[in-house]
Image (cartoon, rainbow over all chains, first blue to last red; front, side):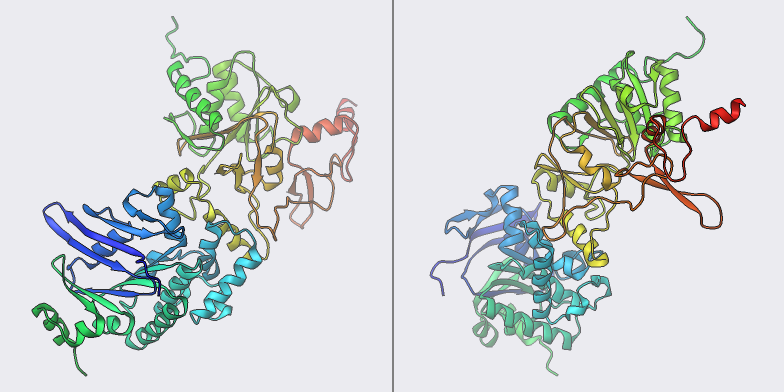
Length: 258
Length: 297
């Protein structure tokens, strides 16, 4: 594992007027590491994710990213062009609702190939080959390449969204409740797929979820949020098996046992 | 003073013309960039060429000779109405001959005859935004233009090839202007796209409802977008014009009866008439003056 962190977050805060979105969040993310952010609805998980991924401007604090050229850059100071380039090459963002992350009116192949075209690929045959390859890696048959995502099931859409994000070989992927709204067996397959991809590609990922099982399966480390504050963080197994904060203990004990 | 309502020369008041001319100057300075302007209500419905009419009104002078075409023809309703409008409000000379005109207002075609440096081509544009149908948010498309992020345009062409095996966009085919802005050339057939490249004439585009003006100055590079393995091609016709025998021109299909007979004739009526006057005869045409002699006898 590389010895320099990919992302350095210091005292990141976001307030909506008087209300707190997230407050004084600091952490470092290392290459190849998967970090889960858990907490109940309204605890500031998604606000934090959006601030990290520059989709929201933080009120205070800094997020520094280790660019491919080796320099650390403050994300808030990137130009719009640099920021957008980063988002479509070195980063991925998997939305909870696939319709937010996909173009629903163009075919699966075009959805997967869009990032390649955005970075200047101009050879139809090669774009299509790359799209076919990525569809197979997320277990979508090559015969579905010309179908629109609206003809896909929820689980397939989510896998298509992942392929679309990973085609440019990003180093960091943000996921907002990637398994939300899927039934349990489809969830299990998707988690398996994400775990395999993250491992094979050496991706770093920040996953927001309210589902502790997702955090257990995917993440190395986790942060527990409550009312905008990180109340506990540590290795996933440690936090889940030996929760120290009363709220975390409550959260862990709330998992339904079947 | 007449009791009747009077109009300023070329209908628009001078302040409006100044505003439009400023937009035109900016558009010429930034080839392919869509300049917003305060489009006025014109005495015709949107979709009839209100953008083109405002451009023409703003650049028209008393010495200009105006030609108006609609799909290449001088004698269609839209062309006739706009020509009559400027005869009435500006008393300018009008013509149907491409070579004689100084300003040509067009809907959906570029004349076959090569344009010269003293001519201005004014296009009527329904939708100026080439990215509109892929990205409906105007805030986002402006951002994409600003950052020259045009991958999405190729997504559309990819979709064409995936569905049809070739690029099936035949009109309003997107072009890259001077290596910077992707532009919608208005719904001209892609057959006409190469004519825009390094044209000697100034080309102005006006979208009245969308309130945008853009331009291609003379000698500007205009490249149609494509893929390396699916290069841009124009339409080819396997027969000449039925009336004048012209080849390598854009043809219209004309239905002759209800039993499936049809003929293909030049879409540019002036081009066809000029050739027939020069003595060219197509497979189904008659020599020039044939009908006139009949009528005289």
